[in-house]
Image (cartoon, rainbow, N blue to C red):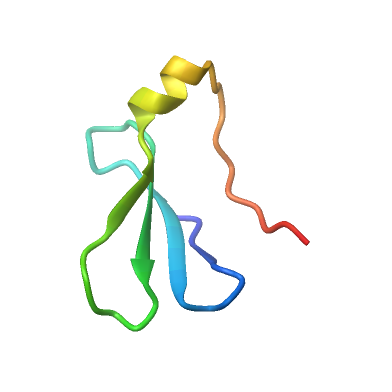
Length: 59
């Protein structure tokens, strides 16, 4: 959910709750090949004290 394109259009970054309701952030090639790669795990967010994750674009 909430997918965002990378600036160069080569990757998609998205949130997922496939681990039973916990939110993780992954990226995947926009060309469709390769595996999804974790960008930010729920465990890392908890350790950093993050309370909410929203994907936004930065100018």
